[in-house]
Image (cartoon, rainbow, N blue to C red; front, side):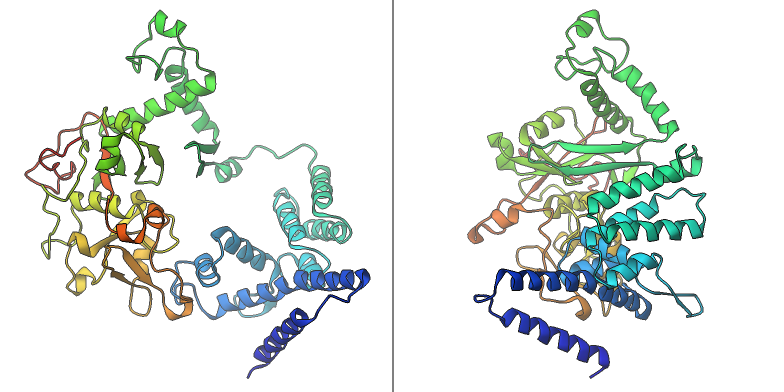
Length: 488
């Protein structure tokens, strides 16, 4: 047994001994003393974890362990969220000892913070505050000043709470750069972004944007046209989306500016889809694809789910479909299209891809949140190069990194009797976790066992001004033809 193994075994034994201690006869002072010691030990342990993570990344790679990246290694093996895995890896990168390219030991990026953590003098919240404060230092600050700034914030954190430490750090930053950051093109490019938040229970989704001056100028011009009073008003029987709205449309427009800009965004997006200039995505025309069931459409109840994971009330699915002809078909069963291609081709046809979007909803690897729009078609039981067939019952959706992860010594996939793709991890990541991904199809968890496999999702898609689907070639961009008497 190595020294590290003996020390860890001793730690485990010490924890067992603490848990076995009874507190029934302890005084308040003794309990407080115990809590103090546990708090100090809990603050110190991450320092050992950071050193272990840094060493692990030197000894092997995430790919060798069977994962796409180190975040996935931690998330899969320890059943933690991706954000928590990112936090641990980020802290290890800043607080663990490093090695130079020639193997020489280097101190941590934040040496004062690492030392205070190892002593148990600061909490994980303090570490987060210090790391973010150092990141905000202006680019003109030299290394010596940055080190002095970190040491000063750590000194404050040793005797103050996270909020007070954060306030003091913000004051220090202001004193260092009282004129504020000088406008810089590289800095603006680095900060640009458009972030989609999670869909809420009311169906709404919040977006946050940091636009460059160019992007802001582009949307100013678009909104000046399409967000003007009377334009793109969904309350009008015939909304004005080109030309100039009538005076009656302007007078009857009671929307706020933010509402008009939202409706303009929808109209511009629909115009882009109608243009036919967006090309193809994974073998299909760029369009909105929605999966739902024939029963939900007939009852006008339930929801549909897009290829990106957005849930739509069924009335919105029907309304969107009224504007479309390209995928205005609901399949109750797979007829009217040659879905089994056997060895005729390696890539899935457009018809097969639509059906896979309906069945899987997104990447089938457990825990993967990538929606169907970002997935490739994966040969589940046997790769095509090794004699696999391109048949619908032998295919599944997988994002590109997960698709590549299926390899000898890595992940393996199989199809169960319910036509669900099961993923078995490599030994280093196998802790007996779930084999099937229900992230995109949570309805499977709500279905009683005797209903498994019934009520399969059906695809509905949307775009405008596209030629109707052809029954002659199911691999055409229009996808498969609807079954007889089954179109909605």
